[in-house]
Length: 175
Image 1 (cartoon, rainbow, N blue to C red):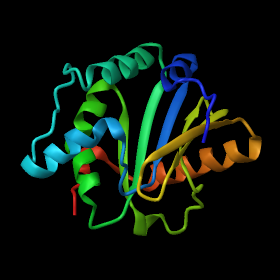
Image 2 (cartoon, rainbow, N blue to C red):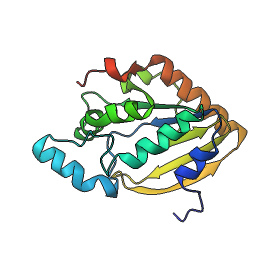
Image 3 (cartoon, rainbow, N blue to C red):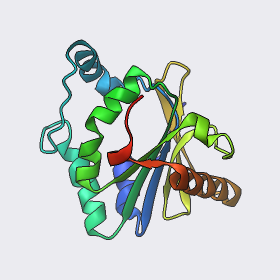
């Protein structure tokens, strides 16, 4: 899926008020995480140092947005018991929080009354969506942008409903 979508960093740099992210997959096969994920599966060890080479660019990006007054929120809809990949994500989410993200978790069975879009997304300033497209096995296939009002309304409503029902990261216990 070819894409002419600007890099995430550029979209976040253009945000003025909000950047919200809804994640709904139980497994992501992100190429640049593969080695770290495999090591975590073997050892249970995960890099949680915000200044490490793995995390520093993300921490700087989010911290910069927060310093400009942009609220950054991430909500994850997860199946329980959670997958190994969700355990892996949860193990390092304190770094996201350290960077300035607000993070919440919603067990999938509690999301049954919420109309959710079929794809993960970032929504910037309640007006621009960056869709994430993944294959069935979790490989990133590409991104698309949309500012279509009906899509923006769906994403904004879905995110806010998930956010209201979700459990703050520091209170969410892995099952």
